[in-house]
Length: 323
Image (cartoon, rainbow, N blue to C red; front, side, top):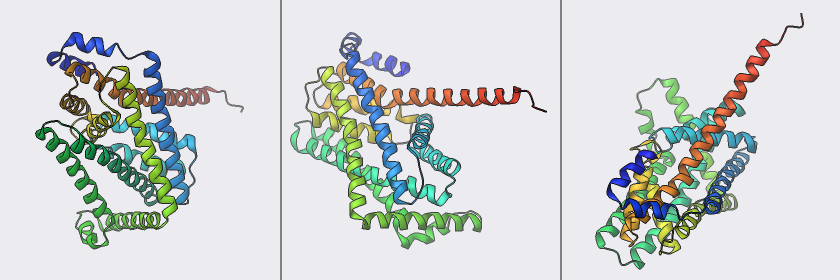
């Protein structure tokens, strides 16, 4: 984060940036961080409910442990969350003794419904941006094009996962026949579970509403920060900046989208008439709450968790034998 601040300082008004940065009060920052903790809790709750739907036994605290570990992994790998989701699938297998097919089904179902919720929220923001802002057409094309590419990527991925007509494509993967059969089993089980979820309208509606609520909290956190910094733009403008910047950060260029999120947020804020210094301060504080705070929290959690394991193991080893 220090490196990003130094880079920003080279092309923004440093005094204006520092002044704006200092406008955020500690209580407001703590409130934003608390909302981020609530977000983590809601995500874990959603995993549990989806696990119950798939007849998987999952407890809240272990799911929170898995999510924190997955968050740490995805924060240090430039893999569009693939690293974090793979970690979650492996931990579901090891901690809850689920099969790889069951674990992948749960991870895939949660990520699919979450992505649908994200597309709805970002789509509403993009529509508002294109229709009700008087910014240059070039900036509108950038935002609209980015959203279209994201939707195409998600729909293509869903089609690859859900279509029964492309099993031949999976069969072309150059792996051993035994592993190929296992892969097909995983894909078929995921397809069946997702189709069942779509048919169960009540379950799908509840999970989609929960996803919309989780994504709405991202915009609420951004709005709280924007108001504290004195940004003279509305809720939808801040929501747009948050969702589009997050979308761009998902492109696997840097670990956790570091730099790409901040750059897009500053670009969008600038197109909405926000001074660069204010936009940079907003981007860094929002990024701290939604990325660095969670990353440091997960790193601290894993450090304490492993330290306790080592201490417990050593104390058990050093204990005198009763014989």
